[in-house]
Image (cartoon, rainbow, N blue to C red; front, top):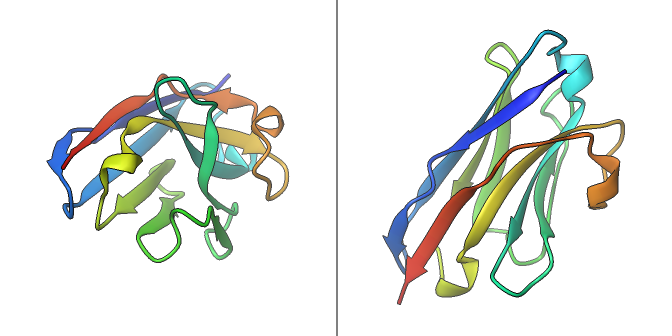
Length: 126
């Protein structure tokens, strides 16, 4: 089993930056079981949506259009941790951000991810 714990969410002014972290732990945690990892977000009253994803090796990444040019996803397999650097934040980025892991391929489909964290709140004030 794999547990994911996110951290780094906060209240920030528009134009500011935040770095989210997601640490994986558990008896079966490994780079293989973590697989393709992603960040999703869910704003009040909206569906959860894909933000960014990173391959097992960290070489290949993908982003939602809303994140391109502002957000950067990376992972440190030695620490079983994935990061999301978010720059130039806007009020529309306000949401609970979730870390996901365990997909066997690059995808934006929530159902393909086996493990989920509890989320971390990001609030951007105007």
